Length: 251
Length: 251
DNA sequence: ACAAAAGTGTTACACGTACACCCATGG
DNA sequence: CCATGGGTGTACGTGTAACACTTTTGT
Image (cartoon, rainbow over all chains, first blue to last red; front, side, top):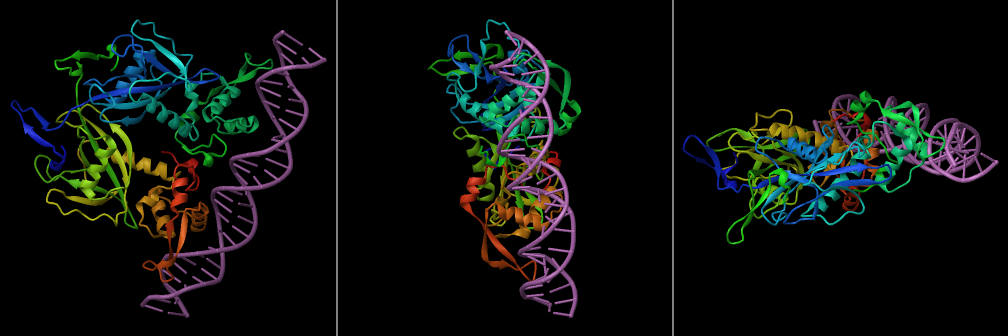
């Protein structure tokens, strides 16, 4: 129902079937940029097409939206098909609409942004899927504009993680402060003072120290922490400063 | 070129016309949420359809994307058709994709977010357009999910203006600090201390004081300022705190 | 002369940052 | 007993917030 100067007119069809006439209808795809963290490095999940054409080319996990679903539902469906995971952090990122981004046929690409706990991800054994984690700084050439989508997602991650406690979505339920710090350091390509880092994090009231320790990385062992879920929900949208000198960050 | 489990297959047509088969193609519309500031209140620009059906119903400015244009181009074209303005601040906001958001036919709605200097806007006299500024807090019922788009845009404006110097896009080339402050106060529904406010703004180095004064609002008159364009471009993406107590803001 | 808005300075406090040493333990 | 990573405290500087009076000038 748009304006006639915008080339939209209504066409009355038989059996009261009304549609917009004179407009082009195009495909709408959802593509998911899925981040994971293995304790040392940030990674993204890519799939390899197992059949012709474009076989062996890597791409983001994507699919076309179905008639009865909305965009979030499509993204969740696609994520579940690839990873088997449900209820993970998923957020609409940006829409890509260059006319020839898909050379076969015009397709609008709605990019989604997802953070998952890499340890929860169990590779779905499926002849059709060839999904693999790649280092965020070293992944193969991708189809279409998927590399641009990843670039946008990377910037979004850096932007949002500076203000909001989203990085916990990448960590297991129990994690240590050194793990958390190395995640932040990886994302910003910087090193932070550990005394200031842990004081800042603990002052948010988001973390609850556990009794037990993680002892893989040191002899002394590092205390596990878990999220305080109430605080987490409450402060998820608030502005918090998680990194030093945020003013100097340019995105 | 998506995965076969996602119901995508390639169909080879005659004369080497390849398309994805088994997928539904849908309309893609762009809808612009256009903000303006008249010196006292935040406003949005709405149009009234001038013809049946849905005549007299108010809506955001929107239109379908054309075969040869990308999304940004479509939004700019639509904005120009309505306001005659070019080169204004325009940013993709969010995509709305509920299956029945347009009851006539499935349509994806890409919402754009625009800030314009209300004084530059000259109503295009056009029998087909009925565009009008409405108070952001008091506008008529809109078609489809356009009210939700405005709500999203309002939140985005509050979010972004707290960190980045975007509100200058709403002001004329020459403006005063009291005008700027009343704009911030309107957006956050709060009152700020004028001494702290002007010190904070001036410390960014974004403002250049002019010789002349604006004398409509007071006998003493308020100095005009203009943007330091170099600083503006440089600091546009940086994190700056424009409002007191941002941590307490929940979006 | 007075009303009405513009402009400005100081102080207290909170927060951010820089910095160095001890702890616990497995080998 | 020592090497390794984990954990903590303090002093200083910067930035933020609270606060009140003077200036200008049209009427």
